[in-house]
Image 1 (tube, protein in one colour):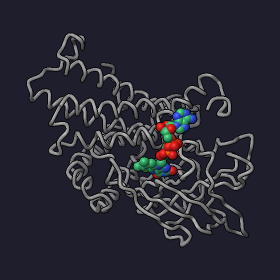
Image 2: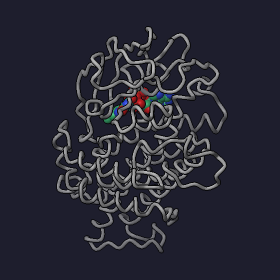
Image 3: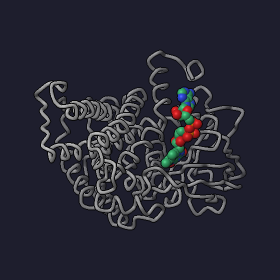
Image 4: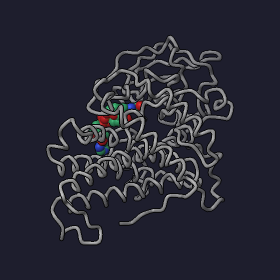
Amino acid sequence: MINLETPKKMAPLIGQANQVAREVLRPISRKYDLAEHSYPKELDMLAAVIDGMNEGSENGGTGAAGVRRSSNGDGQSGNRNGTNLSTALSIIEMCWGDVGLLLTMPRQGLGNSAIASVASEEQLKHYGGKWAAMAITEPEAGSDSASIRTTATLDGEEYVLNGEKIFVTSGDRADLIVVWASLDRDKGRAAIKSFIVERDNPGLKLERLEHKLGIRASDTANFRLEDCRVPKEALLGSPEIDVKQGFGGAMQTFDNTRPLVAAMAVGVARAALEQTRECLQAAGVEIDHARPALSQSAAVSRFLELEADWEASKLLTMQAAWMADNGRPNSLQASMAKAKAGRTCVEVTLGCVEICGSVGYGESELLEKWARDAKILDIFEGTQQIQLLIVARQLLGKSSAELR
Ligand SMILES: Cc1cc2nc3c(=O)[nH]c(=O)nc-3n(C[C@H](O)[C@H](O)[C@H](O)COP(=O)(O)OP(=O)(O)OC[C@H]3O[C@@H](n4cnc5c(N)ncnc54)[C@H](O)[C@@H]3O)c2cc1C
């Protein structure tokens, strides 16, 4: 088995994250799977602990807001294990505990990563410490995020937002929502910018909360933006419409967040593999890593196959996060990690249900829940098919117009 060594300086952070996952998240995992839409109040205390861990850590934090390139990657430093990697590693631990709960952890939203990735220093100061959700998807724009219809029109010192946003993770619980909107729909993707909207803005109207297959602890909200006014300073990044740069600015967020979603998948899959190993051991089935998989029982052979895929997912995830820490362009590796880890998580969790049989399918264990939780990790932040498309474009040197 190949094993990438975890940086030693990150061991304490990983240990703390694992302890939190084991002692806080796992024990309430089933409770909030069953109680969809009720807020896991246990997380308030935990979020404060995580804030403390971030503040106290000189090597980078565990949080979504830790992923910031400008301050942690200059491309010159050679080998730096920074906040992108430490965040990915701690997310793996937390999602070993419960991915739905991690997704609804106060101040750890994907909007926080977006703000950390592209906000100015002033914006960081102004919005820092708040919980931010991310609203890109619309009824007519999912995978093709360039086709969003929400508009932002400048009116004096304010932008006025109008449109509809669906499937917003933590949309009903966060303090802020990062909303993607177009400054000029005739100018295509270059005109798409992100705007920070306070959750209590009267122009942001909650339509409903979704009922879902998995990650039920995490709320998913649908909104309508009706003449929703935000100050000019709420626009993240530059207001210029740079047709040459195209979508680059907005996409920068994904280079940081896709490795984190891949890390979620790695964490969930590891939980399933560990439980399955215990299940096999309890049944008296030995797993021997020193012998060829196919010379062992069918169950062990299948387990080793799943474990090898999991290992590959983890290595790709760490590579993509490490590249972000070192200021290296990582769009290709971020998509590779997300594609591999998302698909592997679905295969591993279902494979573990299969190996464990009725134990895997019943509610007495969490295996069936992990199999339900896994699928979303292969959908949001870009589906499996979209990641493969991005990888193909990059490898073949094709533009999004040439290969779609
Ligand atoms: C629980 C949950 C939470 C979410 N949270 C958020 C959030 O916080 N913020 C947010 O903005 N969005 C969020 N989303 C939305 C998510 O990002 C979208 O569902 C996803 O991008 C896919 O879009 P779609 O559902 O419209 O599917 P579609 O784009 O309609 O795709 C349908 C199918 O067609 C495939 N497909 C589409 N285009 C191509 C192509 N060119 N080539 C090959 N195959 C293609 C897709 O891979 C998919 O299998 C969430 C969704 C869910 C279910």
